[in-house]
Length: 473
Image 1 (cartoon, rainbow, N blue to C red):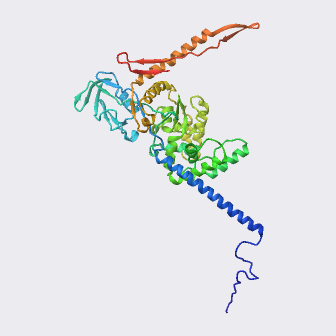
Image 2: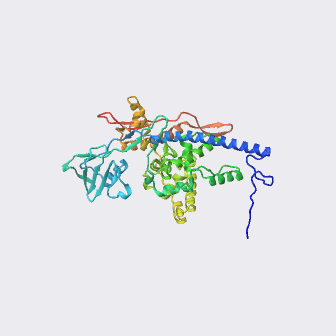
Image 3: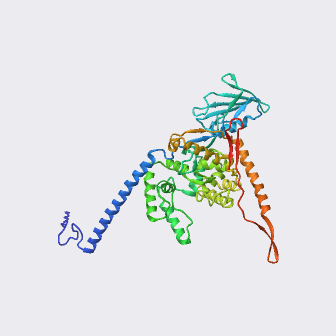
């Protein structure tokens, strides 16, 4: 059976399809407006995309975090016949940056040098970046006393250990302390803690987590207060590197655009590494604490690689508000926030509930907050003032100068503790002198007369040669 099909021509009287724009003037006007708007928005986005692409390229063309000069303390000298333990020498070398050759899985490698504890003492091997010439030494210890020091078969009367780093020399615009760390050297527990509380979908989104933004907006709208943030780690970096802290719609849109561009240029590991070295984690004396490695040293006096679960949760927790959640000034808030991070890690399947409960039972174990003892800020200021009178500050940092000083770490610590104890006694005496019983109406009241606070300073010098060994303000 034959079938014939007749297809009507476009534009015939019976056909409805027509070429060109619809006849309805309203629809035609709407289409024109839509096209013009789409072209305008597209051009607008392309302009800003190219603009910030250039800015990002320029920002990351050189090292992300500028180099800095480093200030070192006076090298400790071990003498023949001195009463000292091999573990004490090892601890001093580890603080100076040496790696334990007997436990490379823990300390890794260090260009400064290595040490190895042996049955009757310790063997020391300076590295290519050591303060010393690369000559190894062996210190033999018997009954808690140095019995022999040898180097290349020769007996030595004394041996200088690697000097300890006091601080990186800050520049005038940003008074901060930072220890740079690679992503591969960041413990998994630290990564898991940060992602659980700051950005759970970090390895899944493309820079902007729209689901989280909508959730945060809904919570803010329904509860009539800001409780959650919608910024991803990449957006936080975008804001910190390129934008001002003002809270406007334009800044938020720009932040999102830069985040998307950064995700196209860098891997997730690189972005997290930038974040780990950039994030602000509080204040130590007059220095800002920048990055997880510096925070681990400041809060726990340990390397980041040695951090525990409750310590990692604490650092991740205080990102939200380093001042408000300071474990030194507000331990209750910090503890509550730390436990919230642990619960979030359970929800994110990073740890088990049993691990979280065990970590929650752990108290805050913080390093002593005496900044004068460890950082010697007045001494560092004196060194800096001396240097910038002789050298260009930019060259000092850009070329990573090493400044070896006369600061004695042990004496600095003793001086700081003496001042801390002594000023309390002075304050008590001054308060006692100013406290009087006065008659107010028919009653006698105890009042403390106002007056200036007592000030203190301590300078310890070598009386034979004149160098400053300790300085406390």
